[in-house]
Image 1 (spheres, rainbow, N blue to C red):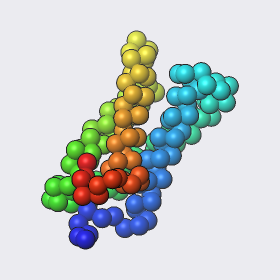
Image 2 (cartoon, rainbow, N blue to C red):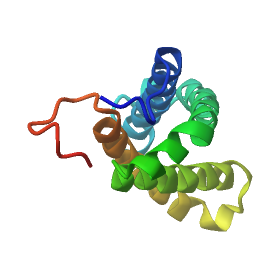
Image 3 (cartoon, one colour):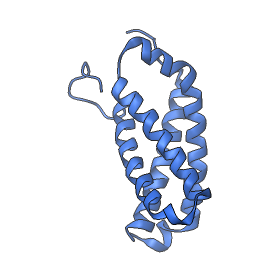
Length: 142
């Protein structure tokens, strides 16, 4: 198997941990704040703060991947859909996260909806791209 685009183990686990930490904390806050499930605990500011810190970690992880992994993925022509999808979704998440914190109150509700919907889509695509869940046909890469 070619090593083109393969990350060192430390980087692979850094990226997986960063993205999963951000996704899990965001999902917990979504359940508590938006859907009212265990609202006093999951909708608490402390969960939102953990999500913000995890998002910073995920951004660092993304930055560690972009210079090499993205370039290698372009050359290898594998997993383009999931790779570009992730970069696109993460860009929307970074922008919408910034708007939630710094943006005008008039667009806040729509930005909240966009942020969590794209976040869920990103999480599913990340799981597929990273190969965390086994697939039936390993030759068919998304």
